[in-house]
Image 1 (cartoon, one colour):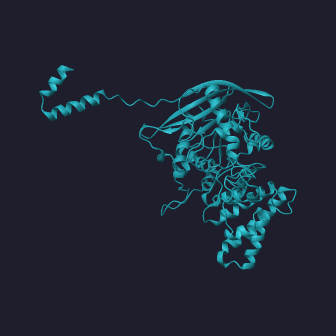
Image 2 (cartoon, helix red, strand yellow):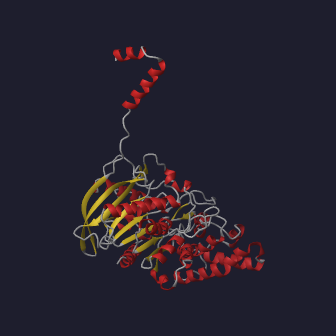
Image 3 (cartoon, helix red, strand yellow):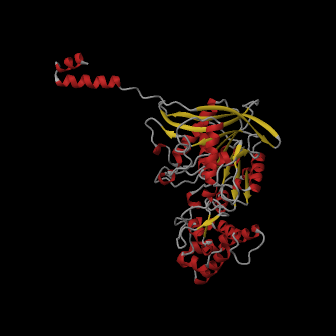
Length: 503
């Protein structure tokens, strides 16, 4: 050290500074390369009396840009049946929505080899929490890859990449499509029949991914499954000044009011009541909304009477709201006289209202009822049974939606002007036309205030599929909410419908 100091003092100041910088550069440690996580284990699940042996892989893939620089750690969990020819075995890629939701809900709720035990309409908040063999899993029909998009699970931007590079409709579609193509190549699954399953915002993602895989990667899908899908900003948001969404919510408002027994002269049959509500929404409510101030007083009063009849909320309230309320106001108002608020994710659930005069719900009773059990059982299963050893937090749900870029460049859209907000039903339509063998299964609950039945029906009614291609679409309905698989009867039916769809 003394010799070095003496040498420096004998040199001009500029040269000393240059040598110091050079030495600092030489001594600075090189950036540590991003290493993927990889944890492999074996297990078995019993389905319909048969044992299915599988290899489970939990980990991350390092995704790179066109220059070969790492941009993301992409988390996933894969289950592959042992003793089968992978080239012939179907493979299902699945994810939840949010945007910003990890895949543990589908993973532990219905698709994976173990499932979380919750009491339907009860509070699963007291440990120890249970996870059991999932007899409703799809692993007897297809291998499974649960995907956590960037910002969820263990997935995150790396290197020079930032969250904004992934957090938007189109960047999300791009990154998930590239992950699937990469997984297919890395694991020799090019020949496998391929299926895509997305829940909630996973609908918007799936519409775009189905088209992107075909266009950018030459990967054709055998089928797409949309679970409680959110497909269009315009058709599914009653909280903005877009009347089509108001109309689409009426049948779910009606189902919820019927379930909680707050409609007058309540019919015993839900289906009859919903058919009447849908006819009212389309033939009476929608025209008055469209007319706006030109609607006559008589037309308005007739509609107000119908709103009270089908939603269980007084005509006076609807009148003061100018015939328009979103799902949060509905959830707060419906059972206000009982001191309760109904759930948004599953409107069969009801909890104590934290504020009896609030105009919007302060919390969703569904999540505290089931969330702790899902979080506890997943983390225990992932770390103890699958052997994922890391000090990182598995991000279940983040606030990505708050900064999400909802613009989307649709196929066939003009290059002029701003891009419209997302509606990837258009992308899905293009994909089904260009791949006429691809089939679509939509699974929807009646009691879903997050993605209502009317919006799903609207999306399907506006698919522009010629001739026989319309026959490639199946719609299955369940007497439950957004996560219909927490309802015992719906869980069994969900499994049956999905298993029949995957050929």
